[in-house]
Length: 108
Image (cartoon, rainbow, N blue to C red):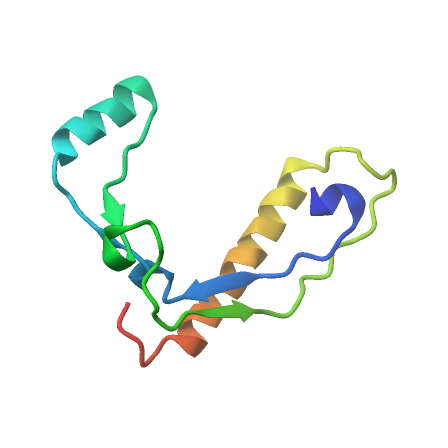
């Protein structure tokens, strides 16, 4: 959509979000079957006091430098798939770079 309208793409990465809830693998076989056959997912998790409130743990949101996007010739027209793929690769590389730079001392 950013390529359709010429908006810059900002890479964002959250560090610590996997510590917000406790998750369980109980009943994983049945849950995977339901996911494959019925296309529904049933996560088993909890937060503080066995509620859906997240635990109070530090979480950082990393915001990277914006990827400059060329202005389209006609706004709102679907861009070429090759252009989308090239910007997707650039975005993924930027997120990986942020991950490498900011999570070296953190248990992931």
